[in-house]
Image (cartoon, rainbow, N blue to C red; front, top):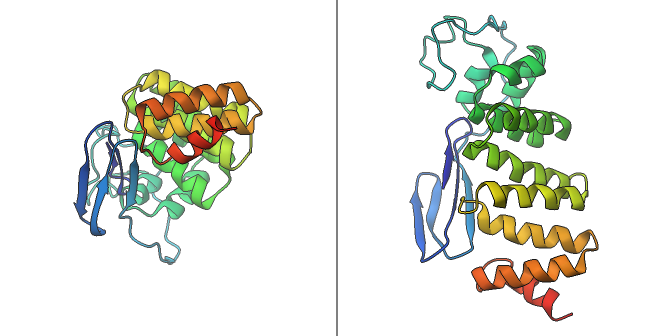
Length: 231
């Protein structure tokens, strides 16, 4: 399970049994079974805002990057991009980070802020920005859960945006090595199988399909795995 306050998103998967997800912005209860994953976002819909003066981008000397924002932190010199991320305004946060020197922002952002900036770039900007943020995250926070999530997201970008299936497979494999029981484990197994198939690695795809069905016989990629093994 993973929850990120910056964009009010929630991800959950299960290795055994079932979990019922309800409440919040979920309109009706959702049952998550073995090998399945649910992704929710309760971020408010963004609306155009009138231009506003940029705040001083220098971080406050007595503020810690991981602490939640209070209403007075912006007035004390909190960077605008951080304030916007905390309020779920991802598109505006991305533009503010770009105006404030995106590379420098990535060097002072927390791991969760880097994930949120990467999501903002995937949704509202060039994927190269997302890749840059995720690579910095992995460099600055090795071994963290966020670093594993960054590997998974890099795999998604390589697969979906760049159609670089070999690279995507390497990133999904990286996630499985670093987070073998992580919340994205089942999805990584399935996506790795797809990446190997699309890269032309039929033998690797069959091996991955066998492993997937062994662990998740009723998972969301089970039908595809059986199809691979029936060829």
